[in-house]
Image 1 (cartoon, rainbow, N blue to C red):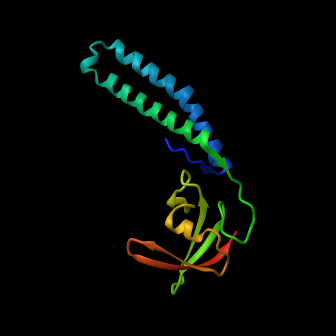
Image 2: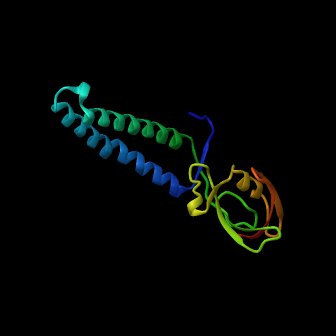
Image 3: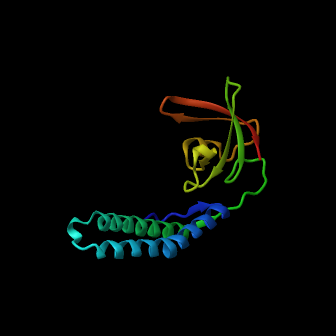
Length: 155
């Protein structure tokens, strides 16, 4: 696993801790019961339920290891109100020469979710915005070429 800190908001950190707790208690118990039931069916070599339960157990243990690593390396950052784009900032941008505005929240890579308009502070767009203020223009590279944007607002 990576040796770098994982930047998280308090909310995401608490969410991951709760998921880890659920996996270690509830989910492990459910899987153990499934394995016991599947073993009771007999011949394990051709027992699809047993194989499925084993695969689920392996995936769950891998997720537990990943969550433990993330939590161990977590650096919790809280957003401080500022006029400079930083971790946790809500930023509105517009492509230069366009009128359509786009809103994003700058988060750590573990929290990035484009459906929720949350972008990582290390993504090309996120890192290009970091440190900028309202009115600043910036550019970043995309597969289709260099894009230029302007910061409309920072919250």
